[in-house]
Length: 127
Image 1 (tube, helix red, strand yellow):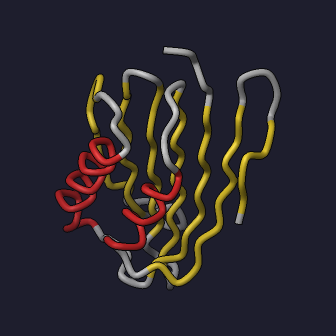
Image 2 (cartoon, one colour):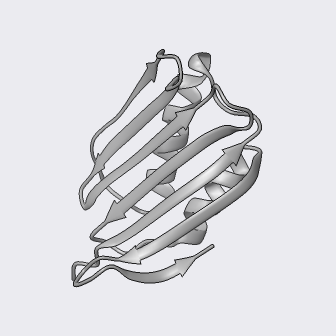
């Protein structure tokens, strides 16, 4: 496999933001994403709820054979805020990631930057 160094950064505002009782749903969502983008799970996913005023929400992370996927969710604000980071040395389809997010949550706003970090920080796509 030729190393790719693709990095997808997503910021999304979500109306039906997962809360403390939704850890199982978010964990299942992460496992499903890993399968959909054809990555091999190395460790995790691990999930925690942070109950700190001003920083309240969920963090879920998975080590994949080719790097990592991390999702941070802040549930205090309305709409809730998602920050998703997918980094892989194996190529993946950003549209699958975006569709999986939109199909699973009520996304009211979504922005992303898709970078190639192999030799520089080169913008592949953005919205």
